[in-house]
Amino acid sequence: MGNAYTVKSRAAVTTQASGSVAPAVVLPEQLFAGSRMQTPPEQRLMIAILEDAIYCFERFYGARDTSSRRQFRDAQDWLMNEPHCRPFSFEHVCFILGLDAAAVREVLLRRQARRHPPVEPPPDLSAPDKQ
Image (tube, rainbow, N blue to C red; front, side, top):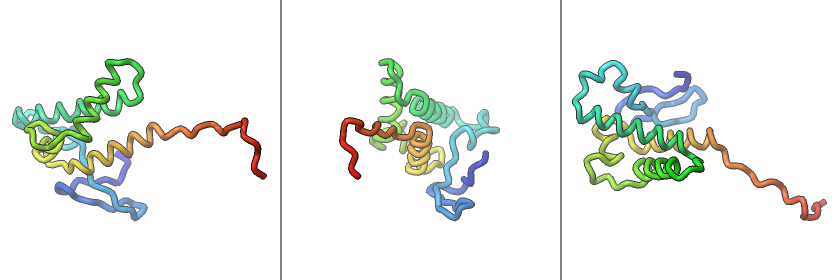
């Protein structure tokens, strides 16, 4: 992995090579790469739910068909808006897996912005030049 994120405790922050401060985020597949079979079934289910939500959030952004848009909206609602009082809410899943939910959200939004930069509207050619 080429970025400067490092594994630390929950809510950790790390300094990048450029000197800027960034959250230390570890995705589930990185955290549990070699020990899935040793992980309790409930946590494996939470990892699968989180992986699926991240996949849908990233894969179906900007989708045109109804089914894909629904999958994106469901993932977006779960990742960004869902209340954290439920056992399988995003906040609770992150807590159980030792992840900082706010940092995961920040990284997902940053990655989405990098992959899908806002498109500037074309210049209004009918307007007179202001010179």
